[in-house]
Length: 185
Image (cartoon, rainbow, N blue to C red; front, side, top):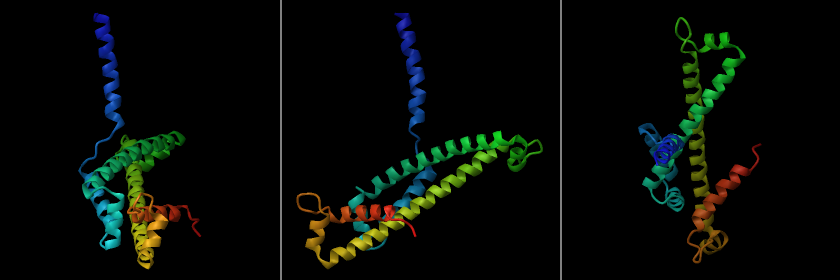
């Protein structure tokens, strides 16, 4: 009986830390960035607001989803930056220490490298998010223009449910996907 309790305790002790690491929780910065991104997605025009409502349940749901995404991006950026700095350090330790070390003995070089690299990766991810929001707004405006030409034909073309009421959201999603797949000249 004691062995069973000991084994169970060990299993729980090993499983709990992996569960805690698996899902990063968003901090205040992640939530602020998520609010900014959701505001950009929602936009100011009627078409962009309608597209937002079609693709997101609510503003709060958007913020929660984007904050979790931001936290995961931050965790991935840190993990990837650490790996990248290890590789750079292994190539030439002295050059690495000279480049990143800020103290007399360069003992902080690895931390400085990880910090700089992670910030750059997060900035690139934020730039991509802003670009995605702009693409969604442009698609919403394009779909609104197409819908205003002939609402019935638009609903028939894009609608997938019984009454074709989801046509606008489907149009925006499809247009964004097509724009992403189109070759850049």
